[in-house]
Length: 166
Image 1 (cartoon, rainbow, N blue to C red):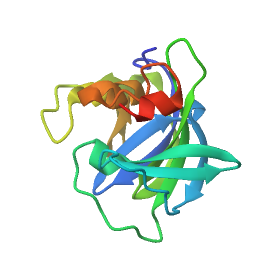
Image 2 (tube, one colour):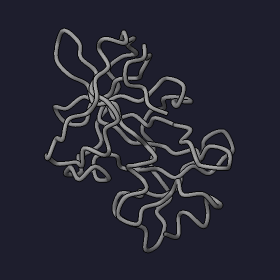
Image 3 (cartoon, rainbow, N blue to C red):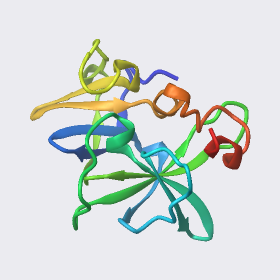
């Protein structure tokens, strides 16, 4: 579902100097950083598993998944627990490690624009829309596209265990 041209409420977070967002409806909770149980032969962006209220949740280094350089954990590092949409089944819980959470913002329909071809460190297909605000731009991420690229199809259906083996 496209959010372009619609009013949006999002969680805005930072990765390095850049700002990104996810719709509030996809963010279940925001946690302080915690260590993950590392899984053998996992890709570098899959930090491992963490326990969230009795559920094993894959922890993703979102910087690495987007092609950025990994960063040291700081007191501001957070884990966004998100419900990522999966076609034909219930959402998959993921813990996205981000440098910092900035705010929850509302953007009017006139501030939500289609993503241009960025040609930068991440594919423009990872960005669903550009959100315009007084202090600059925020990139609205598209979780299914991020995790469907390069054989990292965590969201391609099937069980979470099978998806992690991809």
